[in-house]
Length: 335
Image (cartoon, rainbow, N blue to C red; front, side, top):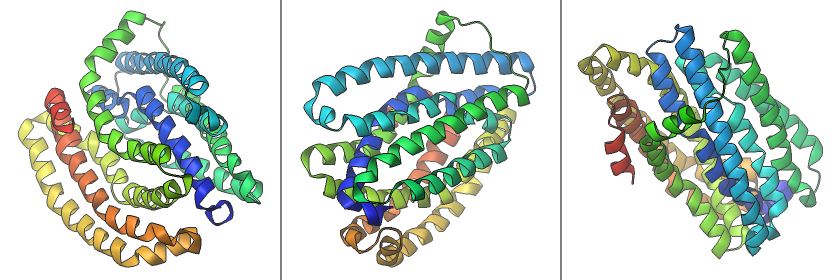
């Protein structure tokens, strides 16, 4: 696809994704960690499961409505955003997927195979449809539209499937409970906002002050790094979070002991990965994007250490500090 649409259109697509990412962060509100933490203590208690699920969904629904109310005037009154409103609106469909995709529940229930299945389904459908839809450079707008529709549909499917699978009953809406949830979990949310702010803001600032082609080079390299990060870091993080949470639930010492065993392994593995990324950079960029993206090689090599730092932040910050209830300290460090 990238070889067809070229760096400029690829940059426009990724600018839209980076801009909308602020809203997906707001809607997700760190529930992948905080809601998982709540439920892993009593995953088989049906009343707790119903309460946590209902509070998370209703709170995310309020955040989705608030985000939409913020987006509309921005598109109408900010000239640069108005010029690219179609791409941004299509990208905003991902927020619907964020609202309905309850991966935190599968993590807490230690049923991560379902997360993998839903992700695989969405990727297969997206790949097939995008290959059929994009034939020339002008077809680039199909990319954000199709991924938004497909992920939204898969998110809805997983939502109702989870309700049936875990016998969840949505409790009546209670605004006071939602406000309490927002207040209780705000420190983790602000911490994650700062952590992700650096990633997305680079693309947004580049899009505002440079041309779309430069955004294309940067995001091409960044996307491959994110793929490497997803393959190397995310599966381990998702698998170990409830496991370490239970270890901390038994005792502080057990939790710290498990974390200590993981850190050297992660450092060695991801240092080797960073070296390989640098060496294979030119080959990887050429294979995935083609010769038009040769300028992305240096950026890709410079970003090779990102998965290592991301993994250490995950273990030291989220896996340890969050499980120890050090939400405020984690926020201070992240900010």
